Image 1 (cartoon, rainbow, N blue to C red):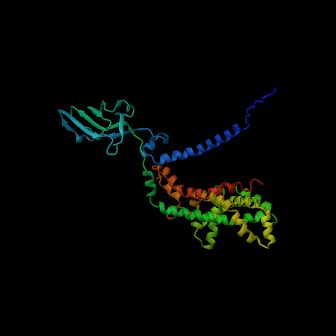
Image 2: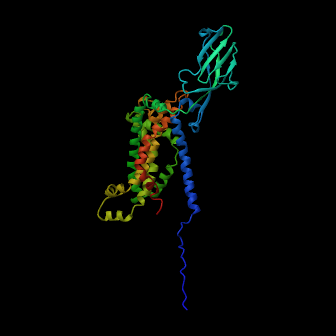
Image 3: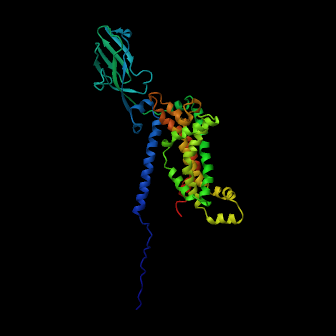
Length: 394
């Protein structure tokens, strides 16, 4: 008697991917922080294209809903009254020519009872008679006796308006006087202040990474310590020193040279630190082979180290350019209030006015000012992370 073996189906282990709670948590946390950083930017963008009046009374998250605001207007003078059907009548419109897209929801003769009478209703006036206000702003004030008041009485009303988006804020910023010159001034400050520290720091970083000399370790420690020096604490002493040197050599005190040197001084510690870490992580075998072939330090630096260090150079260039482009303090201290040398950040602040009446223009100005930094970042972003992480792991 023969037995027949029945083949059992085999279940492949690992066929279904295992769900790792830790990985899900990391991705969720990353998504949360990205949304947290993006949320204010979205709000700023929405605010920059909203109507000025709506932006003043409601937040950007209400941009897609009808906005309401309390306002007031005066009725016409008593001299405009006419006699109709045995009564004296004054007619007009509370909203004026700009109120075509608005509707009155309620009104009153005082601020306290502004919601007491709905649009289309009638209420008594203190100077006699009754007034009827329609939703489109038209009003009719009638009285059995002639009007004798001086100055039009005020009517308080709640007006609602549908969402309105406009580019007026951007037009106001771009058409402001001196914006073009300030844009050029910012480039004049930012480009040399980015290139100069990179050139100096590259030579210093190579020396600290591959050249042997007494005090090298102490020099690295001092440079790292200089990174944490507050700009505000050393700015005034630096300005006084620069003014003394400029006066001794007959150089203009308030000029671009001063702001270039200031940004170079404050940017060098971080630049040397980043580039030194990167260059120290380059393969030692390449350097030794070049020395065996008789190459000098300068030849090794220019032909081998510098091309290989481009990711680190790009990373620092992004940091330095963004910092200088958004800077206002250093530019004000070293350039002063000269109208022909005001940088873009200073010009945009001036758009606020003496009492900050035009604050809504800052929303559009913020996006106009970040155009150049965004171009720089996206042009060099592929080197950004690689340059920052270089030298951190052996």
